Length: 138
Image (cartoon, rainbow, N blue to C red; front, side, top):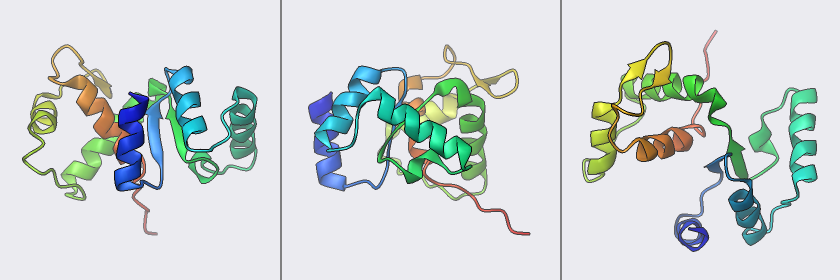
């Protein structure tokens, strides 16, 4: 997986890489591969600093672990971007299209993983959309 991700990074050179925070060993390996500080204590310091100064964590790192504890916000953000037509899905991504068509929200902002086809692809899509924020106009 590390090699696949490395190839994607090499081919597309993304500015930020959002990854599921549930696998710290993979995150550490990816950070090392990209020359980013990977020690847990370094990451914890960055988290503390960003909280203390109310700064987004993605200002300080390229590989950004994301906790799916914020899944409700991620789901509503994804839904908003689609509804406002800020995002367009290429039909050749048929599994993603199927995933979006079958996505079922249960409760308030929870994704029903059992009812959603290709839920892992949907999770990857939600991670990819974290980079894009809508600025409110006052």
